[in-house]
Every structure is written in structure tokens, then in C-alpha cells.
Amino acid sequence: MRLGLEYNSGASEVNFVGNWRALRETKTRPALIFGTSSDRIGTPYGQAYFATLSKSLQPQLGVPLAPYVGLSYSGFEDRVLFPWGLNASFGQHWNGGIIHDGVRSHLAATYSWQRYSATLLGVGNISGGRDLGVNFSVSF
Image 1 (cartoon, rainbow, N blue to C red):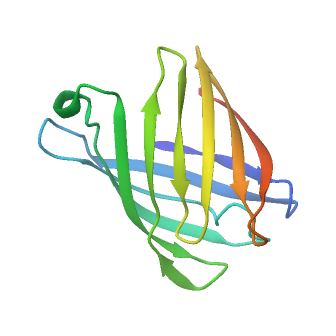
Image 2 (image 1 turned 120 degrees about the vertical axis):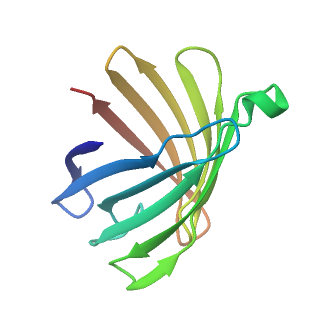
């Protein structure tokens, strides 16, 4: 379980964020995670509620890939979205991948060390271009 607060600088709002891993991933079963956070990247307000299935394919493929799919209720758009993505590990500290939030696709690269992580995001916007974003987190 993870609980916290997140600040959306674009909307100047603070939202509750939480994740609960209901089922741990096994060799044959994906993980099931429920959670809530601010709505999609770029929305001016709103809370999202989601369920996600994720599975590492490292044992089957021999490469560090982990796809995920989910259902998300968008409070901003008042509708259900279908997010998906693919993460890849690049050594002990680096990972990255593609994130599709149910509307737009984004690229992400994360560097993690000790209890910290920093993520650089290439955020798809309405006009089809990309904006850059940064996320920094600390685990307690």
C-alpha cells in the first residue's frame, strides 16, 4: 500500500494519491493494483480511480519488459478510459517506457536511487506535439 499527496502545478491543486496491490504477481498471474491519483497528465482538475493488471515478461522472454493494462475512471472527463503501457528496465537504476493514459501516449525515463526517483516525461499534448515534464518522489 502507498499513500500520499501530489501537487499539480498546472492546476495549483493538491490531490490524494494511493495504491493498493491486491494481488502479488506470480510466475503465471499478473499483479492487480487499485488506486487513485490526480486525473490524466494535462487535465486542469479531477481525480482518477483505477484498476491495473501488470506482468513482468522477463522469465518468459529473457528481457526486462513489463506490460500493463487497466481501467480508469476520469473525474475530469466523467468517463471510463483504458490505459496501457510497457516498461523496460535498463540496469539497476534506470527504467523507461511508453504510457498511454487512455487518451494520449507519453514517454518516460526514470532514474532511481536509495529512496528517491526522478522521472523525465515526454507528454503528448492536444496539438500532437510534446511537452516536457519532471516528477521527483521520495519514499518513506
